[in-house]
Length: 346
Image (cartoon, rainbow, N blue to C red; front, side, top):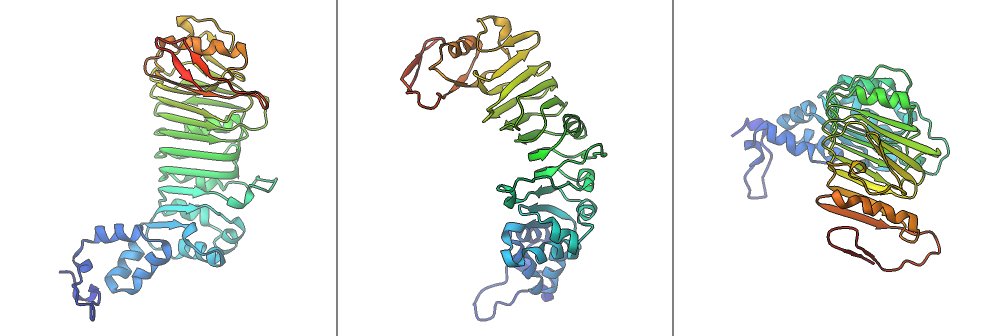
């Protein structure tokens, strides 16, 4: 049994204090699972719990904090916690209150060895100006393993040091093509990359560790280019809601297994010296040999779009087809006979 001073009172309940018999590591894990307001209250239970709370790796999720208390509680918790930070999720990152109450908060996140970090701002969806400068210290938090950024302007030309980052997600980030390339290069163990409606026009993927990449939506540019220069471990490349012209160039991605959704109306795929577009004839050289799961967005009402499915005879496992038509067109049942076994679409 643990020290008597750490025992919780069970008087009047006819029970046994089983918590005090648990190992400190297990109690710390229990604390991390509690919303921040309850986790902090464990400190009043007994001296042992007070020590556990103050030394535990902090898990702060601002959605657990009531709206009236948000501006005061977030900087106070960050400033007063003595232990390291495990996860800080600020889905409503309010710069005004943070800068006022805790001016060195970006440096504090680095000094406290933060491992998982979300910096977002949910109220910017209806506001035209998203250009909030991202503090450069965030990009030198070398303990980070997961980083999610929403609605920021990336600081151009700064040193980036993210040696342990495995997951990177960026949404509505103002960032240049060059800074995006340097950011990816500064993450030597990056496994997963998500890009959602950012400002860059070209994503150059050169990573010895990247396994999955997802691109959703595009900025308001005429064309967007993705180049897989050297991605030997890349297995999954997902594209969704890309309304503008997109060119995908594959130089080296020998393990690519999942690709799509490719929109035959606005996208072009280049692998090596071969180009796959809506008017490409069927040739073995125009099929990515490693891909066995492919997704397509096709307008079957346009005859020219029908050429793309013909290129898929070499696909080995599955084909996912999303049929879209122009506004006002009537969608008719379609039978695909270009594969070994016909597919019925309706």
